[in-house]
Image 1 (tube, one colour):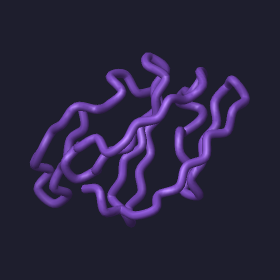
Image 2 (cartoon, rainbow, N blue to C red):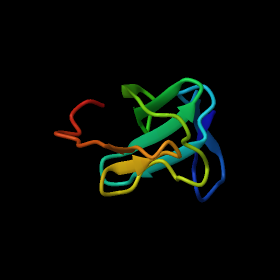
Image 3 (cartoon, rainbow, N blue to C red):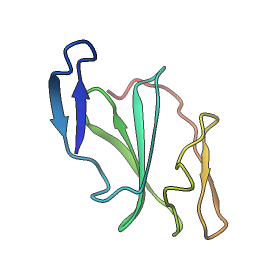
Length: 96
């Protein structure tokens, strides 16, 4: 579950489920307000809107993403224990 918290009051403003169901690595971009979550069951990288939780896209990935990997690098790639490097590029942040 993702939670948005108002920093001054510490009040929870919203909650939404995280995809894939049991992510092991999370990252986000501040500039485009995107959250990247990767998991091994299913083996997916899911891109969602970090303000409302809407899933924008999902991609199949190789096995072995875990907490040590940290899923996404700001340059647009991440790796897994299987030895694969997955590269992605955002053409436009238009899909909210």
